[in-house]
Image 1 (cartoon, rainbow, N blue to C red):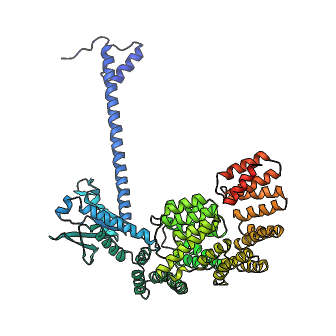
Image 2: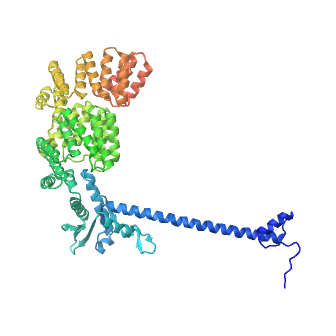
Image 3: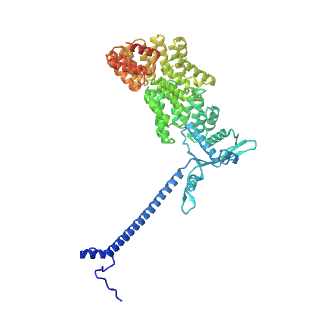
Length: 616
Protein backbone atom coordinates (compact mmCIF):
# COMPACT_ATOMS: atom_id res chain seq x y z
CA UNK A 1 0.00 0.00 0.00
CA UNK A 2 1.48 3.33 -1.01
CA UNK A 3 2.16 5.98 1.62
CA UNK A 4 0.66 9.24 0.78
CA UNK A 5 2.71 12.32 1.37
CA UNK A 6 1.07 14.77 3.81
CA UNK A 7 0.23 18.12 2.25
CA UNK A 8 2.95 20.61 3.00
CA UNK A 9 5.29 17.95 4.40
CA UNK A 10 8.94 17.98 3.30
CA UNK A 11 9.79 15.77 0.38
CA UNK A 12 12.85 14.36 2.21
CA UNK A 13 13.88 13.44 5.74
CA UNK A 14 17.39 14.88 5.16
CA UNK A 15 17.83 17.94 7.37
CA UNK A 16 19.73 19.80 4.67
CA UNK A 17 16.95 19.10 2.06
CA UNK A 18 14.29 20.29 4.51
CA UNK A 19 16.19 23.48 5.18
CA UNK A 20 16.70 24.12 1.43
CA UNK A 21 12.98 23.53 0.65
CA UNK A 22 12.01 25.90 3.40
CA UNK A 23 14.38 28.52 2.11
CA UNK A 24 13.05 28.11 -1.49
CA UNK A 25 9.43 28.48 -0.41
CA UNK A 26 10.16 31.49 1.77
CA UNK A 27 8.45 29.72 4.73
CA UNK A 28 10.01 28.86 8.04
CA UNK A 29 10.19 25.09 8.74
CA UNK A 30 7.57 23.63 11.05
CA UNK A 31 8.35 22.15 14.50
CA UNK A 32 9.02 18.66 13.16
CA UNK A 33 11.48 20.05 10.64
CA UNK A 34 13.16 22.17 13.24
CA UNK A 35 13.54 19.18 15.56
CA UNK A 36 14.93 17.09 12.73
CA UNK A 37 17.42 19.82 11.80
CA UNK A 38 18.61 20.16 15.40
CA UNK A 39 19.13 16.42 15.73
CA UNK A 40 21.10 16.42 12.48
CA UNK A 41 23.30 19.31 13.75
CA UNK A 42 24.06 17.46 17.00
CA UNK A 43 24.94 14.34 15.05
CA UNK A 44 27.33 16.28 12.80
CA UNK A 45 28.94 17.96 15.86
CA UNK A 46 29.42 14.60 17.52
CA UNK A 47 31.01 13.15 14.38
CA UNK A 48 33.39 16.15 14.11
CA UNK A 49 34.35 15.89 17.80
CA UNK A 50 35.04 12.18 17.44
CA UNK A 51 37.25 12.87 14.44
CA UNK A 52 39.20 15.52 16.41
CA UNK A 53 39.68 13.14 19.34
CA UNK A 54 40.89 10.44 16.99
CA UNK A 55 43.34 12.76 15.29
CA UNK A 56 44.53 14.01 18.70
CA UNK A 57 45.11 10.49 19.92
CA UNK A 58 47.09 9.70 16.80
CA UNK A 59 49.26 12.81 17.33
CA UNK A 60 49.67 12.00 21.05
CA UNK A 61 50.66 8.46 20.24
CA UNK A 62 53.22 9.70 17.74
CA UNK A 63 54.50 12.26 20.29
CA UNK A 64 54.74 9.62 22.97
CA UNK A 65 56.74 7.42 20.64
CA UNK A 66 59.12 10.29 19.85
CA UNK A 67 59.42 11.15 23.56
CA UNK A 68 60.12 7.53 24.42
CA UNK A 69 62.78 7.39 21.72
CA UNK A 70 64.40 10.56 23.06
CA UNK A 71 64.28 9.22 26.62
CA UNK A 72 65.80 5.95 25.54
CA UNK A 73 68.56 7.79 23.67
CA UNK A 74 69.35 9.94 26.70
CA UNK A 75 69.45 6.87 28.95
CA UNK A 76 71.79 5.06 26.57
CA UNK A 77 74.04 8.14 26.23
CA UNK A 78 74.20 8.67 29.99
CA UNK A 79 74.82 4.98 30.58
CA UNK A 80 77.71 4.90 28.10
CA UNK A 81 79.38 7.78 29.95
CA UNK A 82 78.74 6.44 33.44
CA UNK A 83 82.06 6.17 35.27
CA UNK A 84 81.15 6.73 38.89
CA UNK A 85 81.02 4.76 42.09
CA UNK A 86 77.63 3.36 43.06
CA UNK A 87 77.36 2.38 46.70
CA UNK A 88 74.72 -0.23 47.38
CA UNK A 89 73.05 -0.66 50.74
CA UNK A 90 75.25 -2.75 53.02
CA UNK A 91 74.08 -5.93 54.65
CA UNK A 92 73.76 -5.35 58.41
CA UNK A 93 72.70 -7.50 61.36
CA UNK A 94 69.03 -7.06 62.38
CA UNK A 95 70.11 -5.77 65.82
CA UNK A 96 72.03 -2.89 64.27
CA UNK A 97 69.26 -2.10 61.80
CA UNK A 98 66.77 -1.99 64.70
CA UNK A 99 68.92 0.75 66.28
CA UNK A 100 68.80 2.78 63.09
CA UNK A 101 72.13 1.65 61.66
CA UNK A 102 70.65 0.35 58.43
CA UNK A 103 72.48 -0.67 55.29
CA UNK A 104 71.37 2.52 53.56
CA UNK A 105 72.69 4.66 56.44
CA UNK A 106 76.12 3.04 56.13
CA UNK A 107 76.07 3.45 52.34
CA UNK A 108 75.32 7.15 52.69
CA UNK A 109 78.15 7.58 55.22
CA UNK A 110 80.60 5.85 52.88
CA UNK A 111 79.43 8.19 50.12
CA UNK A 112 79.90 11.22 52.38
CA UNK A 113 83.42 10.14 53.44
CA UNK A 114 84.42 9.50 49.83
CA UNK A 115 83.16 12.92 48.78
CA UNK A 116 85.10 14.50 51.65
CA UNK A 117 88.32 12.78 50.61
CA UNK A 118 87.79 13.96 47.04
CA UNK A 119 87.27 17.57 48.15
CA UNK A 120 90.29 17.59 50.46
CA UNK A 121 92.63 16.11 47.87
CA UNK A 122 91.91 19.02 45.49
CA UNK A 123 93.54 16.90 42.80
CA UNK A 124 93.74 17.39 39.04
CA UNK A 125 92.69 13.75 38.62
CA UNK A 126 89.16 13.44 37.24
CA UNK A 127 87.02 12.71 40.28
CA UNK A 128 84.46 9.95 39.85
CA UNK A 129 80.89 10.72 40.83
CA UNK A 130 79.67 8.96 43.96
CA UNK A 131 76.07 7.92 44.50
CA UNK A 132 74.02 5.45 46.48
CA UNK A 133 71.62 3.09 44.70
CA UNK A 134 68.29 1.74 45.85
CA UNK A 135 66.08 -0.44 43.70
CA UNK A 136 63.13 1.76 44.64
CA UNK A 137 64.72 4.91 43.26
CA UNK A 138 62.91 4.46 39.92
CA UNK A 139 59.80 2.32 40.21
CA UNK A 140 57.82 3.34 37.10
CA UNK A 141 57.17 0.17 35.11
CA UNK A 142 57.55 0.02 31.34
CA UNK A 143 54.22 -1.25 29.90
CA UNK A 144 54.01 -4.91 28.87
CA UNK A 145 57.60 -5.64 29.98
CA UNK A 146 57.50 -6.10 33.75
CA UNK A 147 60.70 -3.99 33.89
CA UNK A 148 60.97 -0.67 35.76
CA UNK A 149 62.80 2.36 34.41
CA UNK A 150 65.25 2.04 37.32
CA UNK A 151 66.06 -1.55 36.41
CA UNK A 152 66.56 -0.61 32.76
CA UNK A 153 68.82 2.29 33.71
CA UNK A 154 70.86 0.05 36.01
CA UNK A 155 71.24 -2.61 33.30
CA UNK A 156 72.32 -0.03 30.69
CA UNK A 157 74.92 1.44 33.05
CA UNK A 158 76.31 -1.99 33.89
CA UNK A 159 76.38 -2.99 30.22
CA UNK A 160 77.55 0.22 28.52
CA UNK A 161 79.26 2.20 31.29
CA UNK A 162 82.23 1.74 33.58
CA UNK A 163 80.58 2.16 36.94
CA UNK A 164 82.06 0.45 39.96
CA UNK A 165 79.66 -0.91 42.51
CA UNK A 166 80.65 -0.73 46.16
CA UNK A 167 79.10 -3.49 48.25
CA UNK A 168 79.69 -4.78 51.74
CA UNK A 169 78.40 -6.16 54.95
CA UNK A 170 78.75 -5.56 58.66
CA UNK A 171 79.37 -8.63 60.83
CA UNK A 172 78.79 -8.28 64.55
CA UNK A 173 80.45 -10.68 66.99
CA UNK A 174 79.02 -11.81 70.30
CA UNK A 175 81.57 -9.73 72.22
CA UNK A 176 80.39 -6.52 70.51
CA UNK A 177 83.19 -6.44 67.96
CA UNK A 178 82.34 -5.34 64.43
CA UNK A 179 83.95 -6.43 61.18
CA UNK A 180 83.36 -4.41 58.04
CA UNK A 181 83.88 -6.25 54.75
CA UNK A 182 83.85 -4.11 51.61
CA UNK A 183 84.23 -4.85 47.90
CA UNK A 184 85.06 -2.29 45.23
CA UNK A 185 83.82 -3.97 42.09
CA UNK A 186 85.32 -7.45 42.24
CA UNK A 187 88.20 -6.40 44.49
CA UNK A 188 87.73 -7.28 48.15
CA UNK A 189 89.36 -4.99 50.70
CA UNK A 190 91.02 -6.38 53.79
CA UNK A 191 88.48 -6.74 56.60
CA UNK A 192 88.36 -3.70 58.90
CA UNK A 193 87.91 -4.41 62.59
CA UNK A 194 86.23 -2.15 65.13
CA UNK A 195 83.38 -1.91 67.56
CA UNK A 196 79.88 -0.54 67.36
CA UNK A 197 81.07 2.52 69.29
CA UNK A 198 83.82 3.17 66.71
CA UNK A 199 81.73 2.30 63.67
CA UNK A 200 82.00 5.82 62.20
CA UNK A 201 85.79 5.63 62.24
CA UNK A 202 85.67 2.11 60.78
CA UNK A 203 83.48 3.32 57.91
CA UNK A 204 85.83 6.25 57.25
CA UNK A 205 88.78 3.86 57.08
CA UNK A 206 86.87 1.78 54.55
CA UNK A 207 86.08 4.89 52.49
CA UNK A 208 89.78 5.85 52.49
CA UNK A 209 90.74 2.40 51.23
CA UNK A 210 88.14 2.67 48.46
CA UNK A 211 89.47 6.15 47.61
CA UNK A 212 93.01 4.80 47.38
CA UNK A 213 91.88 2.14 44.90
CA UNK A 214 89.52 4.25 42.81
CA UNK A 215 91.33 7.65 42.90
CA UNK A 216 94.99 6.61 43.12
CA UNK A 217 96.41 9.93 41.90
CA UNK A 218 94.44 11.85 44.53
CA UNK A 219 95.13 9.71 47.55
CA UNK A 220 98.61 11.08 48.26
CA UNK A 221 97.40 14.68 48.30
CA UNK A 222 94.60 13.61 50.64
CA UNK A 223 97.11 12.10 53.08
CA UNK A 224 99.18 15.28 52.98
CA UNK A 225 96.13 17.43 53.65
CA UNK A 226 95.45 15.29 56.73
CA UNK A 227 98.98 15.89 58.02
CA UNK A 228 99.81 12.19 57.59
CA UNK A 229 103.20 13.03 56.12
CA UNK A 230 104.92 9.66 56.62
CA UNK A 231 102.08 7.87 54.86
CA UNK A 232 102.06 10.48 52.09
CA UNK A 233 105.81 10.10 51.54
CA UNK A 234 105.57 6.29 51.43
CA UNK A 235 102.70 6.55 48.95
CA UNK A 236 104.65 8.95 46.73
CA UNK A 237 107.88 6.95 46.66
CA UNK A 238 106.01 3.76 45.79
CA UNK A 239 104.37 5.35 42.72
CA UNK A 240 106.93 7.62 41.11
CA UNK A 241 108.77 4.91 39.14
CA UNK A 242 105.90 3.23 37.29
CA UNK A 243 102.55 4.05 35.80
CA UNK A 244 101.20 6.81 33.52
CA UNK A 245 103.19 10.04 33.33
CA UNK A 246 100.52 12.10 35.07
CA UNK A 247 100.42 9.65 37.99
CA UNK A 248 104.21 9.64 38.34
CA UNK A 249 104.29 13.44 38.21
CA UNK A 250 101.63 13.54 40.93
CA UNK A 251 103.81 11.28 43.09
CA UNK A 252 106.77 13.66 42.70
CA UNK A 253 104.45 16.58 43.48
CA UNK A 254 103.18 14.96 46.71
CA UNK A 255 106.73 14.13 47.78
CA UNK A 256 107.67 17.78 47.23
CA UNK A 257 104.77 18.82 49.49
CA UNK A 258 106.12 16.55 52.22
CA UNK A 259 109.69 17.80 51.76
CA UNK A 260 108.57 21.42 52.20
CA UNK A 261 108.45 20.74 55.95
CA UNK A 262 112.00 19.36 55.91
CA UNK A 263 114.15 20.92 53.22
CA UNK A 264 112.93 23.66 50.88
CA UNK A 265 115.72 23.13 48.37
CA UNK A 266 114.90 19.42 48.12
CA UNK A 267 111.20 20.24 47.74
CA UNK A 268 111.91 22.71 44.93
CA UNK A 269 114.05 20.11 43.13
CA UNK A 270 111.24 17.57 43.46
CA UNK A 271 108.75 19.99 41.90
CA UNK A 272 111.12 20.41 38.96
CA UNK A 273 111.35 16.60 38.60
CA UNK A 274 107.55 16.46 38.52
CA UNK A 275 107.55 18.94 35.62
CA UNK A 276 110.09 16.85 33.73
CA UNK A 277 107.70 13.90 33.90
CA UNK A 278 104.43 15.74 33.16
CA UNK A 279 103.27 19.35 33.35
CA UNK A 280 100.77 19.60 36.20
CA UNK A 281 99.27 23.06 36.73
CA UNK A 282 99.41 22.70 40.52
CA UNK A 283 103.15 22.02 40.32
CA UNK A 284 103.62 25.27 38.42
CA UNK A 285 101.53 27.03 41.05
CA UNK A 286 103.63 25.67 43.91
CA UNK A 287 106.85 26.61 42.16
CA UNK A 288 105.46 30.11 41.82
CA UNK A 289 104.56 30.27 45.49
CA UNK A 290 107.95 28.90 46.53
CA UNK A 291 109.80 31.52 44.50
CA UNK A 292 107.44 34.16 45.85
CA UNK A 293 108.13 32.98 49.41
CA UNK A 294 111.86 33.36 48.74
CA UNK A 295 111.58 36.82 47.26
CA UNK A 296 112.07 35.89 43.62
CA UNK A 297 109.13 37.95 42.38
CA UNK A 298 110.01 38.00 38.69
CA UNK A 299 110.65 34.27 38.58
CA UNK A 300 107.45 33.60 40.50
CA UNK A 301 105.47 35.68 38.01
CA UNK A 302 106.86 33.59 35.15
CA UNK A 303 105.68 30.39 36.87
CA UNK A 304 102.21 31.86 37.45
CA UNK A 305 101.96 32.92 33.81
CA UNK A 306 102.91 29.42 32.71
CA UNK A 307 100.41 27.95 35.16
CA UNK A 308 97.59 30.06 33.64
CA UNK A 309 98.43 28.81 30.14
CA UNK A 310 98.66 25.18 31.34
CA UNK A 311 95.33 25.43 33.17
CA UNK A 312 93.53 26.60 30.04
CA UNK A 313 94.60 23.52 28.10
CA UNK A 314 94.77 20.87 30.85
CA UNK A 315 92.39 18.05 29.79
CA UNK A 316 91.53 16.64 33.23
CA UNK A 317 89.80 19.74 34.55
CA UNK A 318 86.06 20.14 34.59
CA UNK A 319 84.87 23.55 33.50
CA UNK A 320 84.20 24.54 37.12
CA UNK A 321 87.63 23.42 38.37
CA UNK A 322 89.24 25.26 35.46
CA UNK A 323 87.38 28.45 36.41
CA UNK A 324 88.41 28.06 40.04
CA UNK A 325 92.08 27.61 39.22
CA UNK A 326 92.15 30.51 36.77
CA UNK A 327 90.41 32.63 39.38
CA UNK A 328 93.05 31.57 41.89
CA UNK A 329 95.76 32.64 39.46
CA UNK A 330 94.06 36.01 39.02
CA UNK A 331 94.01 36.43 42.81
CA UNK A 332 97.76 35.85 42.95
CA UNK A 333 98.46 38.33 40.15
CA UNK A 334 96.25 40.99 41.74
CA UNK A 335 97.94 40.53 45.12
CA UNK A 336 101.45 40.85 43.69
CA UNK A 337 100.41 44.22 42.24
CA UNK A 338 98.81 45.43 45.46
CA UNK A 339 95.33 45.27 43.92
CA UNK A 340 93.74 44.00 47.11
CA UNK A 341 90.23 45.11 46.19
CA UNK A 342 90.22 42.76 43.20
CA UNK A 343 91.85 39.94 45.14
CA UNK A 344 89.24 40.26 47.92
CA UNK A 345 86.38 40.20 45.41
CA UNK A 346 87.73 37.12 43.65
CA UNK A 347 88.56 35.34 46.91
CA UNK A 348 85.01 35.90 48.15
CA UNK A 349 83.70 34.26 44.96
CA UNK A 350 86.23 31.46 45.39
CA UNK A 351 85.04 30.92 48.94
CA UNK A 352 81.44 30.51 47.77
CA UNK A 353 82.23 28.12 44.94
CA UNK A 354 85.39 26.35 46.04
CA UNK A 355 85.35 22.81 47.32
CA UNK A 356 84.41 22.44 50.97
CA UNK A 357 87.53 21.97 53.06
CA UNK A 358 89.22 24.85 51.26
CA UNK A 359 86.97 27.50 52.80
CA UNK A 360 89.08 27.75 55.96
CA UNK A 361 92.17 28.39 53.85
CA UNK A 362 90.23 30.99 51.85
CA UNK A 363 89.34 32.82 55.06
CA UNK A 364 93.03 33.02 55.96
CA UNK A 365 93.83 34.47 52.54
CA UNK A 366 90.89 36.84 52.77
CA UNK A 367 92.02 38.13 56.16
CA UNK A 368 95.48 39.00 54.80
CA UNK A 369 93.91 40.74 51.82
CA UNK A 370 91.61 42.75 54.09
CA UNK A 371 94.69 43.85 55.98
CA UNK A 372 96.18 45.01 52.67
CA UNK A 373 93.07 47.15 52.25
CA UNK A 374 93.68 48.53 55.78
CA UNK A 375 90.40 47.01 56.99
CA UNK A 376 92.06 45.75 60.16
CA UNK A 377 89.00 44.99 62.29
CA UNK A 378 87.35 43.09 59.48
CA UNK A 379 90.58 41.16 58.81
CA UNK A 380 90.69 40.17 62.48
CA UNK A 381 87.13 38.88 62.23
CA UNK A 382 88.07 36.85 59.17
CA UNK A 383 90.99 35.16 60.89
CA UNK A 384 88.85 34.37 63.94
CA UNK A 385 86.23 32.84 61.65
CA UNK A 386 88.90 30.68 60.05
CA UNK A 387 89.77 29.10 63.39
CA UNK A 388 93.09 27.61 64.31
CA UNK A 389 92.97 25.09 61.48
CA UNK A 390 95.89 22.74 61.04
CA UNK A 391 99.63 23.19 61.01
CA UNK A 392 100.08 20.46 58.39
CA UNK A 393 102.18 21.53 55.45
CA UNK A 394 103.75 24.98 55.19
CA UNK A 395 103.26 26.85 58.48
CA UNK A 396 103.34 30.13 56.60
CA UNK A 397 99.71 29.30 55.77
CA UNK A 398 98.65 29.12 59.44
CA UNK A 399 96.70 31.64 61.59
CA UNK A 400 99.79 33.07 63.41
CA UNK A 401 101.22 34.09 60.03
CA UNK A 402 97.90 35.81 59.19
CA UNK A 403 97.80 37.56 62.56
CA UNK A 404 101.37 38.72 61.97
CA UNK A 405 100.43 40.19 58.57
CA UNK A 406 97.41 41.99 60.03
CA UNK A 407 99.45 43.45 62.88
CA UNK A 408 102.13 44.73 60.51
CA UNK A 409 99.55 46.46 58.32
CA UNK A 410 98.06 47.97 61.48
CA UNK A 411 101.57 49.05 62.53
CA UNK A 412 101.01 47.22 65.80
CA UNK A 413 104.62 46.13 66.09
CA UNK A 414 104.39 44.50 69.49
CA UNK A 415 101.56 42.25 68.29
CA UNK A 416 103.44 41.49 65.06
CA UNK A 417 106.48 40.39 67.07
CA UNK A 418 104.31 38.22 69.32
CA UNK A 419 102.76 36.49 66.28
CA UNK A 420 106.20 35.96 64.74
CA UNK A 421 107.39 34.33 67.96
CA UNK A 422 104.31 32.08 67.98
CA UNK A 423 105.09 31.03 64.42
CA UNK A 424 108.70 30.29 65.35
CA UNK A 425 107.48 28.14 68.25
CA UNK A 426 105.28 26.06 65.95
CA UNK A 427 108.21 25.52 63.62
CA UNK A 428 110.53 24.53 66.45
CA UNK A 429 108.01 22.05 67.87
CA UNK A 430 107.75 20.38 64.47
CA UNK A 431 111.46 20.62 63.69
CA UNK A 432 110.19 22.23 60.51
CA UNK A 433 113.15 23.43 58.50
CA UNK A 434 110.85 24.62 55.77
CA UNK A 435 109.11 27.00 58.17
CA UNK A 436 112.14 29.27 58.49
CA UNK A 437 111.47 30.97 55.22
CA UNK A 438 112.72 34.52 54.80
CA UNK A 439 109.23 35.91 55.37
CA UNK A 440 109.32 35.02 59.04
CA UNK A 441 112.75 36.53 59.65
CA UNK A 442 111.90 39.65 57.67
CA UNK A 443 108.64 40.27 59.54
CA UNK A 444 110.29 39.74 62.90
CA UNK A 445 113.27 41.97 62.00
CA UNK A 446 111.02 44.81 60.83
CA UNK A 447 108.93 44.59 64.00
CA UNK A 448 112.09 44.70 66.13
CA UNK A 449 113.38 47.74 64.24
CA UNK A 450 110.12 49.65 64.66
CA UNK A 451 110.21 48.85 68.38
CA UNK A 452 113.66 50.44 68.56
CA UNK A 453 115.57 47.16 68.89
CA UNK A 454 117.85 48.01 65.99
CA UNK A 455 120.79 45.73 66.84
CA UNK A 456 118.54 42.66 67.08
CA UNK A 457 116.80 43.63 63.85
CA UNK A 458 120.05 44.06 61.94
CA UNK A 459 121.43 40.76 63.23
CA UNK A 460 118.28 38.94 62.12
CA UNK A 461 117.97 40.59 58.72
CA UNK A 462 121.67 39.98 58.07
CA UNK A 463 120.94 36.23 58.02
CA UNK A 464 118.51 36.56 55.08
CA UNK A 465 119.61 35.85 51.49
CA UNK A 466 120.74 38.66 49.20
CA UNK A 467 118.78 37.29 46.21
CA UNK A 468 115.48 37.84 48.06
CA UNK A 469 113.77 41.08 46.99
CA UNK A 470 111.67 41.64 50.11
CA UNK A 471 114.66 40.72 52.32
CA UNK A 472 116.75 43.38 50.59
CA UNK A 473 113.85 45.84 50.88
CA UNK A 474 113.67 45.10 54.62
CA UNK A 475 117.40 45.81 54.90
CA UNK A 476 116.62 49.24 53.47
CA UNK A 477 113.73 49.82 55.90
CA UNK A 478 115.84 48.80 58.91
CA UNK A 479 118.82 50.89 57.76
CA UNK A 480 116.51 53.88 57.33
CA UNK A 481 115.13 53.34 60.84
CA UNK A 482 118.72 53.33 62.11
CA UNK A 483 119.30 56.61 60.20
CA UNK A 484 121.78 54.92 57.88
CA UNK A 485 120.26 56.66 54.87
CA UNK A 486 123.05 55.94 52.40
CA UNK A 487 122.85 52.22 53.15
CA UNK A 488 119.07 52.38 52.99
CA UNK A 489 119.08 53.89 49.50
CA UNK A 490 121.58 51.25 48.37
CA UNK A 491 119.36 48.41 49.51
CA UNK A 492 116.20 49.96 48.05
CA UNK A 493 117.87 50.45 44.66
CA UNK A 494 119.01 46.82 44.69
CA UNK A 495 115.47 45.64 45.41
CA UNK A 496 114.08 47.72 42.53
CA UNK A 497 116.61 46.14 40.17
CA UNK A 498 115.74 42.64 41.37
CA UNK A 499 111.97 43.10 40.96
CA UNK A 500 111.41 45.79 38.34
CA UNK A 501 107.72 44.96 37.86
CA UNK A 502 106.79 44.99 41.56
CA UNK A 503 105.39 48.14 43.21
CA UNK A 504 106.62 47.23 46.70
CA UNK A 505 110.34 48.21 46.59
CA UNK A 506 109.55 51.70 45.29
CA UNK A 507 106.68 52.06 47.77
CA UNK A 508 108.95 51.27 50.72
CA UNK A 509 111.65 53.57 49.34
CA UNK A 510 109.14 56.39 48.94
CA UNK A 511 107.86 55.95 52.49
CA UNK A 512 111.41 55.93 53.82
CA UNK A 513 112.12 59.21 52.04
CA UNK A 514 108.91 60.67 53.50
CA UNK A 515 110.00 59.63 56.99
CA UNK A 516 113.28 61.50 56.62
CA UNK A 517 111.59 64.56 55.13
CA UNK A 518 112.77 64.22 51.51
CA UNK A 519 109.28 64.77 50.13
CA UNK A 520 110.19 65.62 46.52
CA UNK A 521 112.29 62.46 46.19
CA UNK A 522 109.49 60.52 47.84
CA UNK A 523 107.04 61.65 45.16
CA UNK A 524 109.34 60.31 42.43
CA UNK A 525 109.53 56.84 44.01
CA UNK A 526 105.81 56.73 44.79
CA UNK A 527 104.93 57.64 41.20
CA UNK A 528 107.10 54.70 40.09
CA UNK A 529 105.30 52.43 42.54
CA UNK A 530 101.94 53.63 41.18
CA UNK A 531 103.01 52.81 37.62
CA UNK A 532 103.77 49.23 38.66
CA UNK A 533 100.59 48.89 40.72
CA UNK A 534 97.96 51.23 39.26
CA UNK A 535 95.19 49.78 41.49
CA UNK A 536 97.32 49.77 44.63
CA UNK A 537 95.97 52.36 47.08
CA UNK A 538 99.17 52.80 49.14
CA UNK A 539 101.38 54.50 46.48
CA UNK A 540 98.55 56.92 45.68
CA UNK A 541 97.94 57.74 49.32
CA UNK A 542 101.58 58.38 50.22
CA UNK A 543 102.06 60.27 46.97
CA UNK A 544 99.15 62.44 48.12
CA UNK A 545 100.86 62.91 51.47
CA UNK A 546 104.09 63.99 49.80
CA UNK A 547 102.15 66.51 47.69
CA UNK A 548 100.36 67.80 50.80
CA UNK A 549 103.73 68.38 52.48
CA UNK A 550 104.86 70.29 49.37
CA UNK A 551 101.70 72.46 49.59
CA UNK A 552 100.43 71.01 46.30
CA UNK A 553 97.08 70.61 47.98
CA UNK A 554 94.73 70.31 45.00
CA UNK A 555 96.90 67.56 43.53
CA UNK A 556 97.00 65.88 46.92
CA UNK A 557 93.19 65.81 47.05
CA UNK A 558 93.14 64.09 43.64
CA UNK A 559 95.51 61.35 44.87
CA UNK A 560 93.53 60.75 48.07
CA UNK A 561 90.35 60.48 45.99
CA UNK A 562 92.07 57.97 43.67
CA UNK A 563 93.33 55.95 46.63
CA UNK A 564 89.79 55.84 48.02
CA UNK A 565 88.59 54.01 44.90
CA UNK A 566 90.93 51.12 45.69
CA UNK A 567 90.71 51.15 49.52
CA UNK A 568 87.46 52.94 50.49
CA UNK A 569 87.63 51.98 54.18
CA UNK A 570 91.15 53.18 54.90
CA UNK A 571 90.89 55.48 57.89
CA UNK A 572 94.25 57.20 57.35
CA UNK A 573 93.35 58.13 53.77
CA UNK A 574 90.12 59.83 54.91
CA UNK A 575 92.05 61.57 57.68
CA UNK A 576 94.64 63.16 55.36
CA UNK A 577 92.03 63.78 52.68
CA UNK A 578 90.14 65.87 55.21
CA UNK A 579 93.34 67.76 56.08
CA UNK A 580 93.89 68.63 52.43
CA UNK A 581 90.29 69.80 52.02
CA UNK A 582 90.60 71.95 55.15
CA UNK A 583 93.69 73.63 53.72
CA UNK A 584 91.65 74.46 50.61
CA UNK A 585 89.05 76.14 52.82
CA UNK A 586 86.46 73.38 52.29
CA UNK A 587 85.60 72.98 55.95
CA UNK A 588 82.33 71.06 55.56
CA UNK A 589 83.87 68.56 53.15
CA UNK A 590 86.86 68.16 55.48
CA UNK A 591 84.60 67.41 58.43
CA UNK A 592 82.71 64.85 56.35
CA UNK A 593 85.99 63.00 55.67
CA UNK A 594 87.00 63.15 59.33
CA UNK A 595 83.61 61.82 60.34
CA UNK A 596 84.19 58.82 58.07
CA UNK A 597 87.73 58.37 59.42
CA UNK A 598 86.39 58.26 62.97
CA UNK A 599 84.36 55.13 62.16
CA UNK A 600 87.30 53.29 60.59
CA UNK A 601 90.53 51.68 61.79
CA UNK A 602 93.21 54.14 62.92
CA UNK A 603 96.46 53.75 64.81
CA UNK A 604 96.61 55.46 68.23
CA UNK A 605 98.75 58.22 66.71
CA UNK A 606 96.26 58.75 63.87
CA UNK A 607 93.32 58.86 66.28
CA UNK A 608 95.13 61.50 68.36
CA UNK A 609 95.76 63.47 65.17
CA UNK A 610 92.07 63.24 64.26
CA UNK A 611 91.08 64.46 67.73
CA UNK A 612 93.40 67.46 67.39
CA UNK A 613 91.96 68.33 63.97
CA UNK A 614 88.41 68.11 65.25
CA UNK A 615 89.21 70.48 68.08
CA UNK A 616 90.29 73.25 65.68
